[in-house]
Structures are given as structure tokens and as C-alpha cells.
Amino acid sequence: MSGQAITSAIELWTAISDRAGLQERGYDADLLNDVKASLGVPQTDDLATALREESVENLLHAVLDALRPFSRMLSDLLALYEWVGATAADDPNLRITYDFDASAGDRYSFDLESFREHEERWVSATRLAADLSIGPGALWDLSRALGDIPTDKVDQAAEPSLRRLYKYGGTWPEQFPELPTSSDPAVRGVLAEVFEVASEVLAQSRAHSSGPQELMTRSREMDEGNDAGPTGRTLLGIHNDHWLAIIEERARNAVSYQWKDEQERADFIRGLEEALALIPRVEVSQQQLIDDVLDVLSLPVWGKRYELYSAWLLTLIVEALGRENCRFHVVGGVLSFSFRGSHLASIDTAAGQLELWAELRHPYATPIGKGRKRAVQPDYTVTRPPIGAATSAVLAVEAKQYARPSRKNFYGALVDYAGAHVSALVVLANYGPMAPSLLTSPPERCRAVGYVRPGHDAEVASFVGHIRTAVPPPPMPTASESAGVLRPTPRPNVGTGVVLHWSVGLDLDLHLVATDSGTTTNYLSLPDATAGDLVLLLNDDQAAQGVEIAWISEGAGPVEVWVHCYSGGDHFVDMDATVHICSPDGNSIDVPASQKLSGARWWLVGVVGIDGVWETLDRASGTGPRKRRDVTRPHH
Image (tube, rainbow, N blue to C red; front, side, top):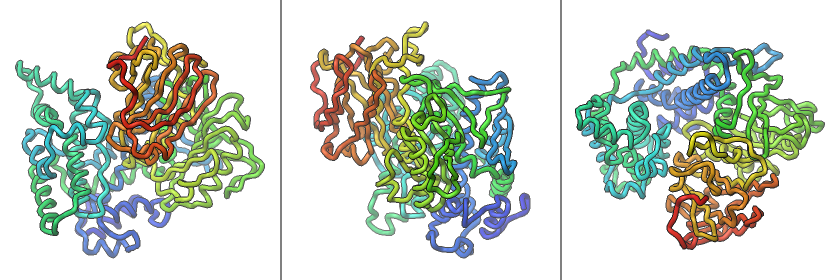
């Protein structure tokens, strides 16, 4: 039907359903539910009936919103494939092959260039870009329409990654924070358009500079006659006063605000609509958008959408492990994912080299899950040698794509994988929701996470955190030939690794305090950190992904390990905060936040002694470590 005029929402949905081959009662029930939610249609109502009163424009926007997670998955996969092609293949045009089911001959093979083309078409078809050449005035009008929050309050109020970005500098985040949840469809709809504009501002900012500081440098260059162009001038005019942080915070305020009456709510929506109307979009007709969406739904990659969810989880696993610690195995220019088992990569850790496998089959005599016979086969396994021993695996990951969680199916998978791999943490990720009982009471050594997909940052952070808990931390960096550059190299059994992770998108920080000198190592130490530091923080999690990693060298102690709730909260337990200690002898200790921390903003987790021995303290504090020296540089 592409190219044929569509005049009703029912016609559009029929065309999309036919072109996409939607299984509305099966694998695509989640997409259907997302469309209903965007339109304000109750989940139990029939969509076709509701569409009789709906406009083509509203349905098109709802479908675009529902398809964006898939678009984001393609972008994440493309970034991983490009990195593997650049670092592990002789030919940068890497070929990727998936044998999803060898018995059925279900093989999907493509080269990097064709995948890049498909990804670009998907992103283009599902994105409504704003024209930022208009100058900063209309964007500030949009922020004012959202409400009023003084600029000088933004550093204390906005989402952590944006607050840190403007306050301390750094690089632009990869994406704008997810849209706050609202039970009001009209408010949610207009806020979604605001976030589309903010996302375009962020995308253009990333194209023009690495971060705010570079934009400020360009501002000085403009004063000397170097014109940054109309879009560049717009960006300079808004980032000087923290526009992205203000938009994000004002949107959160709007979602939680209690309207005095219906007139106030209507005035708010109308004010935003008027402000948005002053920001031109890149000219694309509604029919062109429809044609583009129907076109991308015909691409082969959409036909493999169920299988590619499992493929996308690999991008999160690699993120958790650190790309620089993974060496992918490309044979003859091909990265292969086979149902018969594929050795994807070798991983450098503080405890030695581990191996990342896809579809690694392992014997198990007594499986309880449906379809398993004397063996288990997780989607991904991280294991040490010898491959195949029951005690070798440290992690097993299984992907599910259920619109409604199947407790029996999920429970069977967790029990079987944990029974076969007796030393591994088993993590099950579902695209849709998770059975409540598996969230609160999973089998031993098992974790179950629902809504692991783009746009659900807290759930993604929880999944990534579980991966990092199971796998030993990266090798301790050593001094490289280039001064100040941190290059991980394998150095097992040297020092103590500290991994803090949490599941809620607030900001926690590691603080490592040398008790003899009072010297503190924290996020302020990062600009001057070098590989020779005895206490070394490897990262500050500004993107709210919930993980920070540090190393304490032998001989550095005693060093106290503190956690601070930087965002101003006092709910360590609700954030599922845990500190993972990897001691020099290779043993691991998990210290989860306990109820005794309720109401505290500081948590004294424990201390690494002068001999490297860990002692758990688990104490709450209102003021944090005792300050004997006002120093935030790592000690040597």
C-alpha cells in the first residue's frame, strides 16, 4: 500500500499490520500494548474499535514511538559491529552471520555496510527532527511553557548525568533521559514532542562538539569571526544556561504536578502546543512518513526482530564487561553466531582470562524446563577453562521476549541453568514485564529482570549491574608509555577490585578514603588520575547506568570504602545498591545495602586493610567520612 493515500487510522493500522506481519496475540503483543498506551486506549479494549475515533496523525505518532526501541537496538548493534570490524577484522566491512536454528536452515547473514544502510533507514523513518537553525529564542519559549525553575537551581535539581555535565564538564550523553511516566495521555503526548525536540538538540550537540566546554570554545572563536553556522549559534545560545537540564527537570515537575482544575491543565497543554508550533520540523509530509514506515517494515531485519533482541543483549553484556576488555574472534572476516555454539570473545579480568560464548550447550541430566533434554543452552555464557566443567561458568544469560511473563517457563530456565552451572549467576532478561514472584524471590544464584529494552533505563541498568556483579572487575591498569593514559592489562592477584552497582536511575558515588592520610579518591579525582595511583577510580557513572569501578593496590591500605547518595536521596535499599569486592586471592564478597541505612546519605561499606584483607562494616552516616585533609587527588 506504500504510495497509496491513507485517509483513516484503521486503514493505516491495517497497512502496518499486513506489511509488518504483526502477531498481535503473540510476539508483537508488546508493540500493540505500546501503541494503545500512547493513544490512551485501555489495554483490555480492542484497538480496531478505538481507531474509529482516532486520527491518522495520532496513530502514526504512536506507531513511531512504539518502533523506536527497535530502531535503538539497531543503532546499538551497529555501534558494536563497527567496533568489532575496526578492532578485530582485517576487512572493515565485517560480515555477521546468525544461524538461529540449524535444523530449520534459519540463517541470517549480512555485511556491515548493508546493516548500516538498514539502520540509517530505520532511524530516519522513526525520527521527527526539529530544525534548529531558528535561533535559541523558540527553544527558551518552550522551556518557559513547561514551567518555572530558576537557572541557579538546575545543578541541584536536574537528572544526574545532565547536572554533572554542565557543572563539571564532560562529553554529551548518548541519549536524552527517558520520558517521565504520566497517567494522563494528553500530557504524555505533548511531553513526548518536547522530548523529541530535546533529543534532536542533543543529537545536534553531539554532531557539533564533544561536550559543553568545546561549545564554549567555539563561542570564543565566533567572537573572532569564526561563524559556527545557524545551528551552532542556536546550540551556543541554549547551553550557556543549561537548557537540556532545565527541560528535563521541568518535564518531571509537570508530570508530578497536581492541577488546581481542568482549566489549568488545559492551559498547560495549549501553551506547550503553541511553543512547539514555533519550532519548525524538517519538512516531511504525513504521507511520506507513512511510506517510510511501511518501507522499513519490509526490510529483512524487521523479519528477524525476535531473534535480534537476543543479539541486542550482547551490546549490554559488552557494555558491562567494557569493550576494551573484550577481544572478539573474527574468522575469515566473519563474526558468527551459531545455534551450535560460538566462541565470541575472550575477556580480560582481574582473575585472568574468561571466554564469552553464544549458545554454549552444556550437559544436564535432570532439566525441568519445557523442551530441554539432558542439556541446557543459554543464549550467552561467560566461562573460565575448562569449558564444559560444571564449576567453570561464572555467568549465564537467557533472553525472553514475552508480552506477558510466563512464571513456569522463566522459573524452569533459571532452575535448569543454575543446576547445570553450579558456580554461575544466572540472569534472565525479558523484553516485557517480569513475574512479580521472580523479582522478589528468584531461585538461588538467579536474577530476573523485566522490561530490559531501550527506553527503560532503570531495568537496563539493573541487568548491566548483575553482569558486572558476576564477572570479576577489569584488570588493574598499569602505567603505559603515554603518561596519564589508562590501558588495562592483565595483572591477576594484584590489589582489591571494588564494584558499586545499583538499579535505580539516581546518582551514587564511590569515595575511597585512606585512613592514615585522610586523602579521598572520588569523581573529582578522575581528570588527574594515572595508572600509577595506589587508589584508582576507573569511572564516574554520569549516565545513571548504575556502576562505578575502583582499584586499591596492595600496600595502599587501610582504605575505607564509602558510598554517597549524590542525588539527595536516602534509599540505598530501594536503589538495590550492592558493593562487590574482588580480593587479591580471587575470592569475591557481595555487600548489599541493608535496612539499617534507611534515612542515611552516606554508607560506610567496609575497609581494605594494609594487608589487603577486607572487613565489612555496613554502617550508616549522615555526614560521611571524617575530613582530615581537604584533598580529592588520588594518593601515590
